[in-house]
Length: 84
Image (cartoon, rainbow, N blue to C red):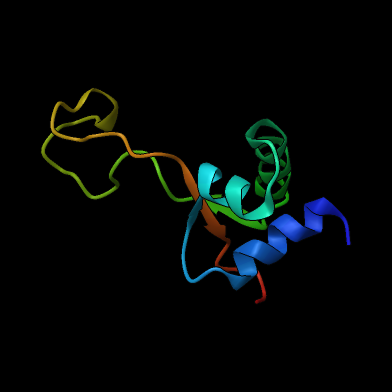
């Protein structure tokens, strides 16, 4: 099995979103190489980005400049359309 498919299988086995650092440790691969593989699956629509800034904050007009939202590490999960 290719490493690319091992990445997708790790998400299928996970109980929720995974961060890049967590997945890199689990698969024992370089984070830089993992970013490229995850980007591939995001472009294909198999993974979605779930981390970053809070989605439900309505205090400010724009999340990017909100002083109340603390950025979280990027994390990814299977796309809702992805068969498990």
